[in-house]
Length: 149
Image (cartoon, rainbow, N blue to C red; front, side, top):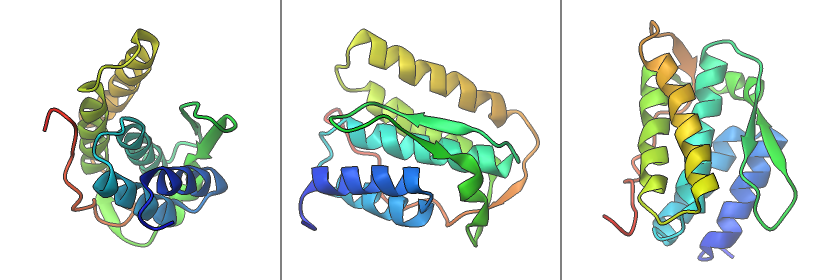
C-alpha cells in the first residue's frame, strides 16, 4: 500500500526494530509526506535520528519506540553504525530535536508530551559535545510538517 501513510509508518517502525535503518527511514519519510497530520510519524523519525546519534557516539543502547497498536519495540542503536555515508553527530542531534519539536506541536496527552521532552533533553546533551562523523545517509529533504505548518 504505497499511498497508505499508516502502512508505511508501521513498516518503518518494524524495519527500525529489525535493524534495517535506511529502509526504515525511507518508509518513515514517505509516511511523513503522505500524512503530515499524524503525530506518530515525526516521533518515529526523531527516534530514528536519536538512534543514529547514539551510534555516532559509539553507544550501545536501545531506543524505545512509542507504543502503537502493535507490540512494544525498540531499535538497537548499534545497527545504525553500519550505514555508509558520513553525517556529523551534531546534525543528527539537531534533526532529532527538530522532529521532536514538530511532534510537540500536536495536541498530545501529557504523558506523551513528557516522553518527547525527555528525549529532547537526552539529545540536547549531545549538541554541546564535540562532533564525530557517523556513517549515515544525509538527512532527508523531507520538510518538517505538522498541522501548525
